[in-house]
Image (tube, rainbow, N blue to C red; front, side, top):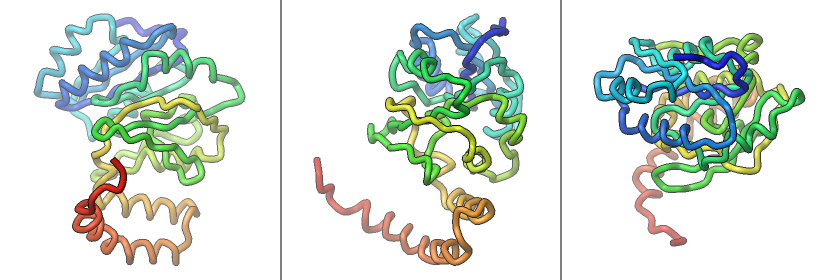
Amino acid sequence: MNINQSVEISIITVTLNNAEGLRKTLDSIWSQQNCDYEHIVIDGGSTDHTLNILHAAGDKIDYYLSEPDLGPYHAMNKGIKLAKGKWLIFMNSGDIFASGQILSELKQHLSDNVDVIYSDWSYLESGRLVKADIQKLNIRHQSLLYRRDLHETYGYYLVGKSVTISDYLFFLSIKNTRWQYSPFPISICEEFGASSVTNHFYQRIASELIFGKRSRINCAVILLLYPFYKFLKLNVIKKLPRLYG
């Protein structure tokens, strides 16, 4: 596998036992037009057909590694350390680009005066478009292109048992760098995952307290009311008829 030493954008895909999702992601990446990039795949030691897919891809993938790891953030860190591009974007198995022109459009926004380019995204399951909000840090790494050298200043993704907010911690760390909003959605991704579980919510509130985004009183009120909100969401709101469509 030959890695382009002068590449500008590195796409990193992490995967584990999601062969069908990986197929969709690879097809989406290969459909990108008018833009040079390198593609790195980090597999956590899959036991399904993932390796067959990677072998069959040949030189369409610049580099892939398959070995046990400590979870997705460990795999992401491996990809970052292998990347040669000045800019990084994560498109993990099951995620796809919103169109075949995304990378070429993003390339036009690359500048010495920008550190992070972010955008909206859609969900595969519902097609719902989500607006990115930098003030609330409502962003997704699939719709984020950022400078690789930010990791030299702010460190890599935190790796730990049951830790699901390492990307959010990194975003909090770099929130005062130079961000630019992209007017077109970058990605289409899965709605449900680690970020949808209760433990993730508690980790996020704790992080916002540590970084000064919320006061102690605000956090206490949220944590007090959250069980009631979750009960209503699961048992009442989901059962209500849709008002539109």
